[in-house]
Length: 584
Image (cartoon, rainbow, N blue to C red; front, side):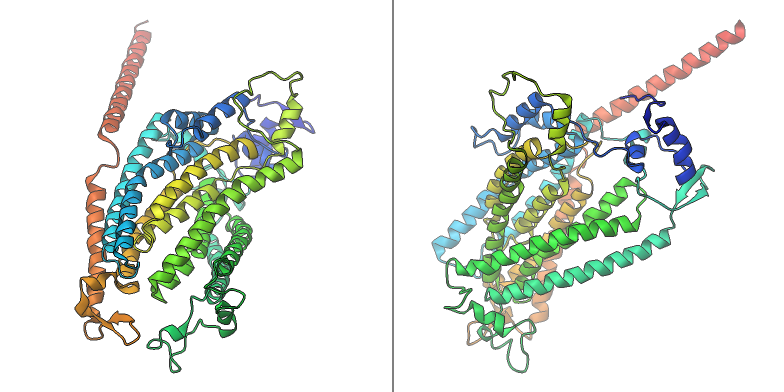
């Protein structure tokens, strides 16, 4: 949409003045982005597109589709409508969710078969000899999933016109932040005045951000240790060979651990009292995440990033590392320090179930109740909503209603799916049923997100995007790391590998198994060799499959060919025109 450059905003200040004179004088540069200018001078309270009732109703019906339970993912038509209404970033999110849910069907069925065989044989997860093969197959599946999603992402980017951003689009994508500050200097590239902030000063601020983050991570670790004691997971007397008077357990706190004994407040043998410490731990995690969210935003703003993209990536990385640490630290502790796969599985099942319930409760039900209490009404996607109102709402009423809604924050939705992917991939050898549970959780999550965006949140501003961006890098990191974690769970944490290499393990009088001291180094070599073998297989599969589909490459080559022809034709016409002028 084009705006009149001389339109008066207030106090006889025009957009032309803001984009040229004042911006140049105060910041050493000119801004052609109207949104940038209005936010810089605090001339607006809210910039947000308004919901369109008919389209919002149709799209929400397409995604929710409660009448068809077997539709585990939105159709391609629904994804297209979501992209057209909400924009590229939201379109990629729902496409990713649908793609992941469909692909989880194979490991879900396989995990159910492994679980059924284990129940039939009467084995525990610690002794099941088939679970390591499930971890191997799951890793191969995850690599194939990652590669085929990249291909699907490129298809969607080409379909939505963002496969290769033009110079103008890249300039908009990397536009300077309104809060970026520094001193004015002459650009060594263009020779024009620009705002400059030295890189070494930003690196010093990175160190400060890292120090604050480490301090908060230490707090989260202490909370986890207290939670493990309250849940009865830290019991040195059950493994006297490892923990004794000469080598006491460093994280055992008897006053807290005693509360998990039979008959006490958090009796671990009780059905409901044993869950209380896990619920308290989850509440502490949510509280710490909320606190760090504010801290991370302050730290990222203090780092003074020049562009919106670098600011966003830095914020995503900080919050992901902290929240992933909060969610995974207890699981890694049980798996690789306590080396107890049974407790690992118990904690994983408990956290997974509580987190799935929490996602629906806090993201949908609670906001609906708060919105209803605030405004007295909540939008619902009724099919009979096409009936005309006696008195249609005025523009001011519509804007007031939209302003009362909460802004949409995409980070939380991506973060939840990334954490869930970590549960299913990093600990596949401890909880094979995680994929099946994830399918059901995603079925609810997609519908809850569609309703949340339509009824509870403001319609988000649409930004051009060619994919998941930083989130794809994080998803890839989790998937590649799963090769190491599953090998360690099979070889160090549990007795799963002992069925195939019994001579490398020793059993104590208390029936605890451990690596044989004389052959321990050989077992370590075998486990890490297996992990390297899995990585090699993954890399071969990942590189054998082209990132860009062949039919898409043909379309891209055809587009470049047509552009070259048009450029050649324009050049010929320009040459002919000049020749004609000379003859005249």
